[in-house]
Length: 109
Image (cartoon, rainbow, N blue to C red; front, side, top):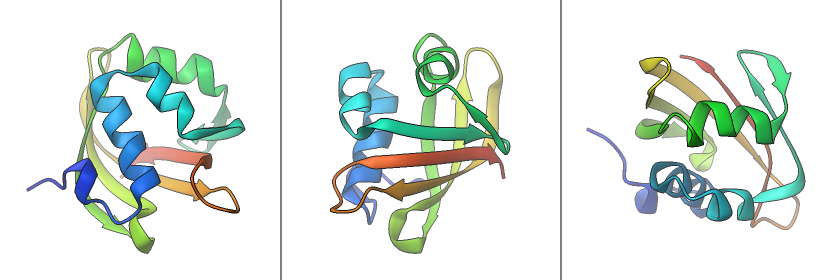
């Protein structure tokens, strides 16, 4: 059973998942701070380059299996046209004041 983005405990993380699944770059970048950072399997990556390759140009999709830490840690069945489907962990840091993600980290779960 998956958790719908609107049902996630943290609405900012929910907006992130919704934007990924809708392949909506504008909505995606709107939930990130201008200086947001990210890592994949422990290595920092360029946000724009990585998201274009791993999400937008490859039809990325997140099915959230579980959440923890107030909705800021997810286990996701993630799929895209490049890698197929894999179980991944996602962790989000919300900027002070809330409303935007300043960092996200993903990797194999």
